[in-house]
Every structure is written in C-alpha cells, then in structure tokens.
Length: 101
Image 1 (spheres, rainbow, N blue to C red):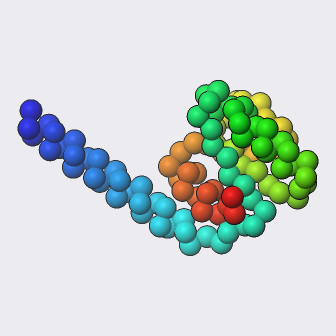
Image 2: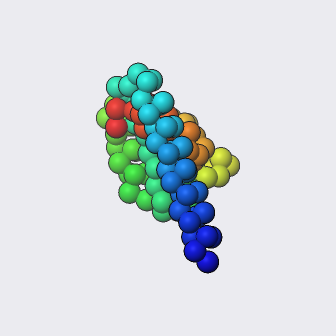
C-alpha cells in the first residue's frame, strides 16, 4: 500500500511540473489587449452560466473585442463572435496567457 501511494505522489508531482512548464512556455507569447478568455463549469462547457450574460453585454459595448471560450464538446452551439477552443492543458495555458482578461 505504501509503494502505491509513493508512486501516486511521484506521478502527481511530475504532472504538476509538466503543467508549470506549459504555463511558463506560454508566457513568452505577447498579450492581445482585445482578447478575452472564458471558462465555465456550468452547463458542461456550453454557452451558459454567468459568463454568457457578461460576454453578451461586453460584445454589445465593444464590437472589436475577441472572445475564446473553453469547451469540452466542440459541437456545442455558440454565437459567431466567440471562438471555441478545446479545454486541454495547452489551451488552458496558451489562451489565458495571451488574453488581457
């Protein structure tokens, strides 16, 4: 039992190191002042929850702002002004590091 636990802890530490490296690498990309990244845990990654209404209003007030939304299912329906991006480690590191908000 102790060996399984030690292996699991070692695995989690290596995974955390890999995640940190992804985020550090993505910090090299320039920030886009007109880019907003959105992630929600409600509605299984679809266009919903509180961010839906915030993004709608922000889009009404600032038509030049670009939006990316993290989704688990790329088949979900979104407004045309929102770019769907897969909810993967590299996306979660890249897009927020490029976004102003």
